[in-house]
Length: 215
Length: 215
DNA sequence: TAGATTGTTAATCGATTAACAATC
DNA sequence: TAGATTGTTAATCGATTAACAATC
Image 1 (cartoon, chains in turn red, cyan, purple, brown):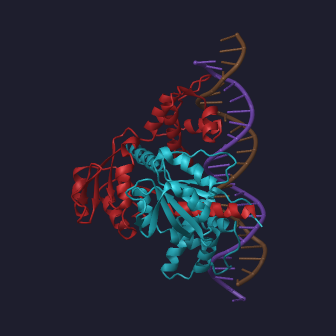
Image 2 (cartoon, helix red, strand yellow; image 1 turned 90 degrees about the horizontal axis):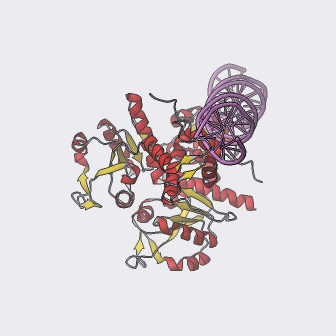
Image 3 (tube, chains in turn cyan, purple, brown, red; image 1 turned 45 degrees about the horizontal axis):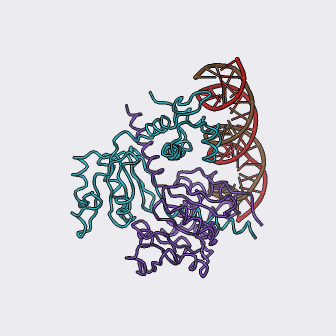
């Protein structure tokens, strides 16, 4: 049932495809060719057709792709319709930003709980989500099977919490801390890092490089 | 004076090299071979040597690399010693998280100001940074040349602010909004996106794919 | 000196682009 | 039907890995 392994380059483009198709759909566009989609996204038509062919045949010769249908196919491929759930660990500024401003549900996730250790906020509710004490993490996860744990805690406690999440059976960790998590080899968990510092440093390189080119 | 263009794959690895070398330095490691660094980072020794050779010769046969020296070289390459400056646009949860918890100075940036339109917070100070009214953006940037503008505003105002930043001469935009900025072609600005949704959707794909494999 | 390890050249692998028969 | 556009196979390009002479 499983198709050949999809390269990470393709996987990284899928969310962009979804986003662009969604924009097109919102704008009322009914159909689009790989050529038109490519030029609006800065990709070649060939690459788009090649990428999509990893997953099936979604187009029609002479016509192109139906925007709504293709958006639906890609949302399925991305797992947006699998009722994934998430919990947030760490309700500091960043955790709160995600709770209040990030639309988990638009990306196919239900955010079911948040955890923190700070007595002032444990028991309160932010954006409809109750903040629980981190001590109750295992009890909660045992009751509520959870797809993804979101780490927005200080770096020094990140690895310990990651281990607890894995032990409790989460499938993925969305890691916003600035450390590289190290977990036991057999652990069947997928880690997705959002390293702000790496991103800013790449930008720093590029603007410095552009400066040099101007000289 | 400029060396051949460095591939984006290499650029994306540089911050990781920096981070690992910094960890090694903090741990008191004096020297390391490409082989040892590779196995700790999950890369081949060949790739590390190939990557570094884009920028110079930093090692010594039979010895390897001096950790502190190599860290210094990479920080130079990344532009961490160029006194870059940054301003934040949007002092909501995410903006505040960056102001209070992200260490700009550790990455070679000085965060000099933040801007918002909300009367309640304009004029206040967060983490030592004054929140100014967005109306005063151009006046501020004219006085204080700024390397990077950080967009932590609602998506609907992002593109307008990006245009104002570019007109005021920033070199880079660190974009945390969920939209793809569209700027005039001639604009000499580098955009670095941090798309939370794309990252979560990639994770969603990977955990869903792992699920299928187990079946 | 002998062993270790670099920087670089060559070989391999994988990803992107081009071409085109199939067909709506 | 004729024109447009797909999915796929082949060609090209670029990035990673392997090999090795140079040398600390």
